[in-house]
Length: 370
Image: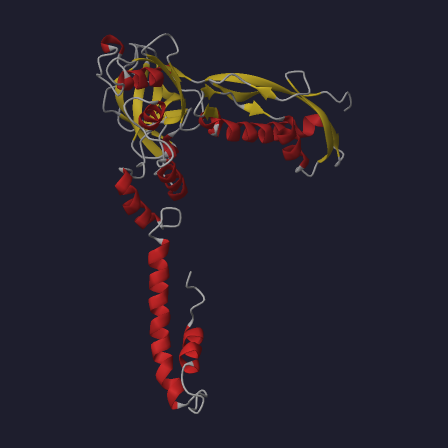
């Protein structure tokens, strides 16, 4: 607002207010007397400008945004530790609770056993997404009797980095749009979304009669959650043995069913003319990656496909658009032209089911050429 208030502008304004008979040239008494004051006023203007900027949530720097958000009971999500499944070989080898294992540049510690099998839950000692390893050799840091080797086989609960400033700002501003209260839709989305490793959340009220609520969620990596993670979220929201008793997050009287998001595989047929002398096989892997990146973007906005208005609440599905796939592939230098793209065999967009994430099925050449 005051960025144009430089010392030159301020001094000119001061000199202009003096009588014309006074010498105002550089080096004059009037000029030399007003310049130091103009510099101080310029600094004051900059402080006022900085104050105004940090007064409002949509422009405040992180430090002051956090202070502003405290008035709404909000604070940035802290970094969390990933929990993974480590499998031992041979199958009768038990990994002791508290034993530690190194995978690349991070370490994991065993915190429990899964269903009396040779699979164990392990928590990454380093917070953040760095610990979200779905595979890898787990090298024991200390000797484990009978262990031949151990491997990470899945991510149960993804770790998350500290919430970024712009994501926190968006969450703060959205807090004014809906009021989370007493088990309404916004309340479920807020509280379930705050659970470590949870990404998108969809709520299906009265899905199986009065008092019933279905909560469907994806992971913070916009993927399908493991069954163990779904079970843990169910226990936090409405433990099965104590359903409707208000033991978990859910209010008294709500019977909540928690499910993980499913997947819908989309088969893509491409009719492409290549401009660099290559063929479909040469570029298939790269084109598949382009499509997968597009699907990842769609899955990141999965929760936002719901429709909320005064007259209705409706969960819609992700829409996969042919135009988006074609425009992204056309940005590749090796693509000269593209047309008649198909999704699951038809030249039309697809809206998948509301509780499913989009995944890439087959990517095939339908041009009939090389």
